[in-house]
Amino acid sequence: MSGHSKWASIKHKKAITDSRRGAMFTKLSRHITVAAKTGGGDIEGNPSLALAVQKAKDASMPKDNIQRAIDKGTGAGANEADFQEVMYEGYGPGGVALLIEGLTDNRNRTGAEVRSALTKAGGALGEPGSVAYLFDKTGVIVVDGERYSEDDLLVAVEAGAEDIEADEETIAILTAPADLPGVRAALEAAEIELQSAEVVWRPKTRVELDEEALKKLMRLIDTLDESDDVGEVHANFDAPADVMERIASG
Image (tube, rainbow, N blue to C red; front, side, top):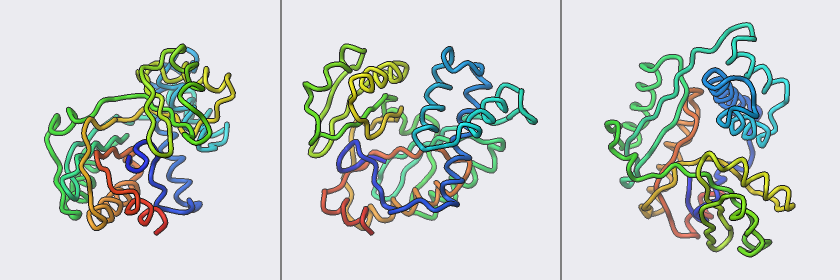
């Protein structure tokens, strides 16, 4: 979810309950498992697995959980995984374009859940390709714009970053997805503290929402997020800073 700032996710919940943390670990485990199944269990030789494991570490997932997920993907665990990657495209409140990434062992079930959530929110599920052209897959590393200057981040450019963008509160380093781990490592070696580092579907254009439409969108994203099958929801929205802050604190 992108808004104000463009690169900082809305924290519209003040805390993650134990149940939501467990659901988050389930989703992260699935990503690790699928990456290991597709490209092998060697983190050094499997960039997709390296990204999935790093994301799990960022979320404080225990090492044992991470290893079990890798073993499950490689067949070394008790049960080999049979999950498939899925991507749904559609529209939400205010005409916002949505890309919904997921991992599922039952495409029919997951598709029905996503369609139902969109319809109840006044949106609609689209055909493949209907909104994907509005996004670019990009590695994004975010740092505190009040703490660092763009000059401090030149090490990222030397490591392969494609661009650096700043807004009111943050600075974003943009990379090709495959270059994200190397750029991240260079920044950490330079003792630059990162707020986040992930591969996202970056909107090429944004739709500005009023407060009511933004609330509806947040409720929709919450509903989608309750499904274990849904991993990430990307939306091309923006909103005034004061509206974003009210939603975040609510």
